[in-house]
Image (cartoon, rainbow, N blue to C red):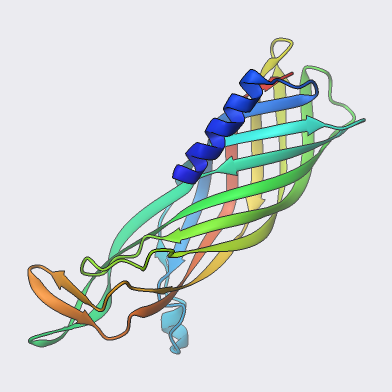
Length: 234
């Protein structure tokens, strides 16, 4: 969230203090249909590697900056921030009585930075615009996995890449202020190789030990992101 807040503050300040002709600025929220974690992506057992933990739908802040080129093309740089957590029984550990099965707290933070090229359809008017487009993004992923109080080492994050397609419409009810609705489809999968900071932890007051400090998991963000926001143009 810190990265998103810093980037958002920078963009808002820049466009408030130094507004530029031809640019647009959007602030809104997005709704995602589904996200899943595959906590055993690195095991040799095929069936176990396909076991997933559904994290459900999600709501994310959205901020974007656009620039209209000559004609009906424009470029848009967008930022979002997604974060989800869950708890499930999924880890074997050793204690003084032998091997036991304990819960895992798991989740992710996901910061997509995406660049899109949008085409405004010919039947659009100055007030109402309908558009389609697509582009690519860079994804910053951080694991929130925790077992018996043991978290991944610092730097437990990874960077991924992906593409997306979108369509939407916007309506300006004044010269420079309007509303925007966009449907964006992307299907990023991020494979994460992590390592716990220690092999020793405490669960329910009992000292426990991990058999392996390394783990591999996969994040899948499926479906469509629905974005609604206020848009201003300069």
